[in-house]
Length: 256
Image (cartoon, rainbow, N blue to C red; front, side, top):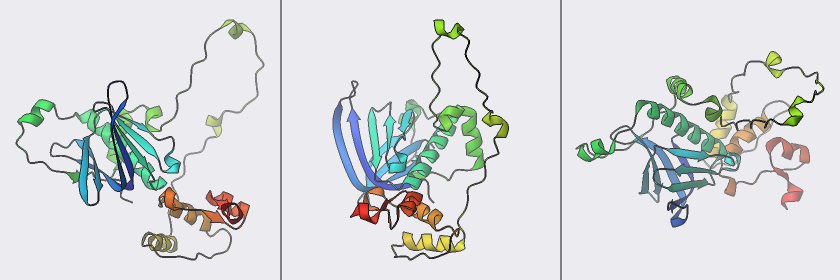
């Protein structure tokens, strides 16, 4: 999976200082690409109908990924007052795209960005190269420069306000700590050769019929296929409620 490219619908809004929309452009069936310019700084490129429509230099940004599982996310460029709203993205590809952006930008922030003065005086020809895939060294550098809560997109816990009720004794609950019994995280499960062949057939637009007895990984494969398809054009149905629940879809009766 190439994490630097994403097929989606992009809604780009230019805002003023008060957050009012000054200009809005919608690009359907476009490609968003992460790359580097001639100075090595990270850029976000939006291409539609085989034409480059917009380029954005990424420095100080916010990423809103609450609806990633629905194929939606928003990137706010703070210095340019621009909102880039992505929709109809394959959920798995969108998650990988945002993770790549976050880690690469964290590494570049530590290294430092090219100043405006150097850009104006430079005689280097303009260039754009696809950003390199994530490697272990990138993850190590990102962890050193991003707080753990920010890196994993966890909401920080709100501190409880102190009051008179804090002095009242409370009953202690006998709860075993999760940290004591917490097991090390297992590595992600990979597809076997048969499952990969089915996945590649779906990517090529072929119709497939999957068979197999219980426990052979049919639901697991279906979830992988669903994660690679755009939500607006994908309808997940099953004959029974149990099967629909396993793959995150609905029954044929409900769909009809």
